[in-house]
Amino acid sequence: MNRRNFLKTAALGAMAAASPISFSAFGEPTRQGFRPGRLNLVFEPYELKLRHAFNLAKSSRTTTPDVQVRIEMDGLVGYGEASMPPYLGESVESVTKFLSSLDLSQFTDPFRIEDIHQYMESVAPDNRAAKASVDIALHDLTGKIMGQPWYKIWGLDPAKAPSTSYTIGIDKADVVRQKVDEADPYNVLKVKMGLDNDRELVEIIRSKTDRPICVDANQGWSDKEKALEMCHWLADRNCLFVEQPMPKEMIDETAWLRERSPLPIIADEFFQRLPDVRRAAGAYDGINIKLMKSTGLHEAYQMAVLARALGMKVMVGCMTETSCAVTAAAQIAPLVDWADLDGNLLIANDLFDGLKIVDGKVTIPDRPGIGVVPLA
Ligand code: MG
Image (cartoon, rainbow, N blue to C red; front, side, top):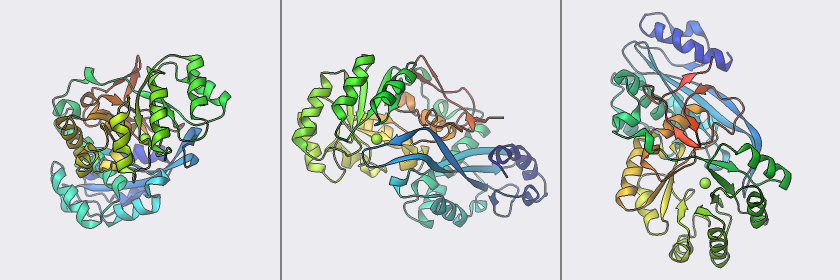
């Protein structure tokens, strides 16, 4: 079954959920025995195709493995997604294995999200993207039952969502120039760094625009003195902050840099789960929350609240993923200082209509749940 048909059968599946008809009548994707009045989990691998090769300090790729998920109950469908950039260690195999090992049909109440997370932790540790896919689908389903988007359920003002940055990856000079042209609708550019040509990359961008940039070194700077020099150099070039300048293991060196840097230092690779917020507080000014690290929205919201209570800066980011997971992440955007929600814009085969970028700002759809509808 192709991807479009997978989404279309959501409606058929929803009808089947209310009737004793076996779901297997609709063939693949993977689904266990369907049970009315219970949570039913359905999932299927999907390869994301990137518009540009994605070059980081330590890797390059043109596709991202992904698994699309639905949780269905009594005629309603919640959509979720696991995106697995290889450096995080999950794969289509590990995600489908984890999801296959879950029995969500033991649950009759989709609002028991805390219990379902505890159940998932009891099944296996780690598997954060796989857990996020279930969490996102549960938030979509429960939001639809309540008839409200999650930002509203949390009492947040969508007008407070910030501008999103648009990523300019490491690339040849002419490609960088082209990407800066493509980035015209965005108010902030995110520059990936960590190779020898860092300064050249910024000079090319500055030759075309004076819009603010933020820098993500992806652990690429291992010399603290040079890192500090770069922070000063960038501060003179309208840079807002530096994300993960040094390897995540270099905690003392990062704390040293943070004390001296004119720019805020934000944790990304260092920071995964809720207890890491407190750990990060000693060495970083802020955290980059991503649903594929946080196991979804349940913990992401708690991370944002805790970080703010600790006086830290908060950023919400994403992987390359469809509008499903990106729009889910956008639900907490009113709580953050900076957003980096361009993952859906970097792929050529999106599956959903969801958040929009209007005048460079994250604009959350006023739709129930996570706010997405499958593209026809
Ligand atoms: Mg990063």
